[in-house]
Length: 431
Image 1 (cartoon, rainbow, N blue to C red):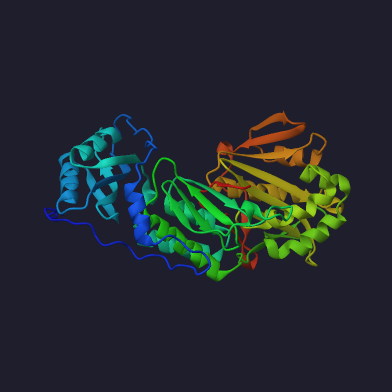
Image 2: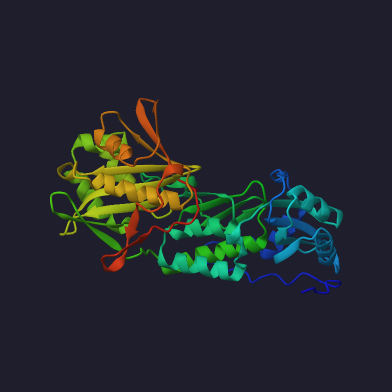
């Protein structure tokens, strides 16, 4: 169907996210003016100039045009002249200019550089383009509602939801206090703010969520969407999916595996109290007396996922952590002495690796000691290619996940069944 685009003008801005009384932000008009006036010093990534693809290719493209009648029509005409199909369009008004974001299907043989050149000739500026895939075909309102629903079910989905909402970016979660109990960031109040390629959002727990996207500045519309998702998470409070698995060990005893969070802090500390000094030292690589200080951070949903193994009486006997560490992903295990060498660590590790695979991680690493035979055996039991190296007197074992089977790990699910672990593609840095 051909549309007459001779007089297309950008739509009005999308609704703003509600302002939190405790987290003031710059007025929205000032934010727009600051965003327009700033000259972006970050060059976009080099466009994909690969060869022909037999059935065409999907592209995500963003370009800036003057906010005047006919500017969008000129872009659409230029794209039509290269036989490029516009599958979706979003506009991000900035006052004197508008950022137009397209999902395109280009014919075989047309490269990203070709599309970018056509758009630039039609008046587009600061054009950025990258390959897209079928997941980008979902329209924005549907995608945002889906992210909101996932966030409503699981507090750990917030950072992952932000990554899905904002695309390729780095997310760091900074706690309000360090594991040692000292205030982080000098104790200054956290304010929501947007500064070109960096946005800072007040986390529901009082900390800060920092989102960085060096290759593409954030728009005020994206900032408003991110604030709305964080506000939703804050209003819902702590929550976890209720599912769990009951596993029968070789000896015949049942162990339950489930997700854990900070509500499990007392039980986790009791488990520490039943662990030997050697077990705590191997896990935390420091003074045994400091072990309890790290539990609140490790159990927090902003820094990764935690699985707990517990007995029929509800006593936690093991914890497994999947920790987002920038572009790396760490796995860590602790099983109290009386329950070691029964396969609990391997069960936890398999599920953590399944989560990492679903998150799109290329590999996971474990920091341990050569004398920690249990952890070494659990990593070997994954059946994955392993790399070993010594760093500062510790052993770092890295498992390559490209060879990981699709579904050996399961996440707890109600009614005694299991389902594939569902974790969206996100890598989140931890302090």
